[in-house]
Length: 488
Image (cartoon, rainbow, N blue to C red):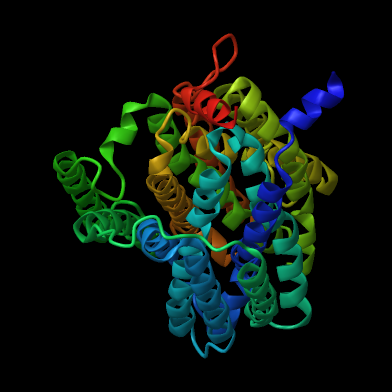
């Protein structure tokens, strides 16, 4: 009986093999983003620029991902997923090589936009292609596979990045991408099945994409300007955020009249679990990406660790995320996303609240335990939200759903990085007199202030969590039932 159930629950080998090939293509972009985080201090020193300017190396990458995501669905329809994947891999490899050779910060930030754009083509394709192959009934287990590079990034990215920066140069963070991309490109080309374009005559929604991309980019840019000014109350921030909100409102009006002929149809929001997923993904981007920017700087600037030591110190968090991954997929399929996310948020809070009082004197092993706990919880945040956005929806709209999810997650990630940098820079600027004396107390308080925002956004995520699917005591979601009927 047990053996039969296990075989029934197992994913077909062909689907698993395709999932791993696609995951390989995402390894370089995922590792790259976490490796760059730990190199920010070194970049700041080498280019003689403040954190508020250098953080554009991270934020620009995320911002370009936001702009690129809407193009994925159209390209997938026109030329097929495999070709889009190969083009994006090639772009990422070439831009990595140019980034490694950058002569100044402006050039590096510019090429990071191209890197981010290519990564923005890759990440939505992961989900879209697998949903098309497997259907949404196995999405929890599929997401557990696809999420692996996201999990591996926090474990190996800071360690590899720290060792590279410590013993080689920050340039090797980008050089190391090149051989990885070459191997991934060849395997995708040779092993991944050909993907027939869904609609060669598909028209690109230029108006919708422009409004959505420009709106989200304007909001993020406004927050970034706040980090430069070290204050949220400045003309640039208010102007760009206001413009961004206005453009998003215009998109909503435009999409209302265009029905399903837009990049993100408003009909998707008829399902409350989709609405909850989209709100949650913005907050989740802040909760995950914000601390990813803070923690390497916390260990280096406050606790005096080398960049390699800071990378090693982040391993417990990554291990926690990796350990949570296999359990999450099974429970999302079994009990629904709502309670998996709520449990993840509770554990994440246990692993984040202590940072409100942690400073340079905090016991190192206590820090490691708390980071491990935070990793366990953080590993259960993105997957439930991304998975549940597909439940109950028409699988013909899988591309649009994936685009919506990636846009909101990337906007949240860019907001998280900019927000944390703004809080830290703002606090240090307002306490400049104490900073002159070399007091580490002010530095500790600056990071504590930033973690207050991380805690607040984590707690706020509980609200959209209650909009997600709850399968406890209820019948399976419609999309899952449909898939089972088709397989029968």
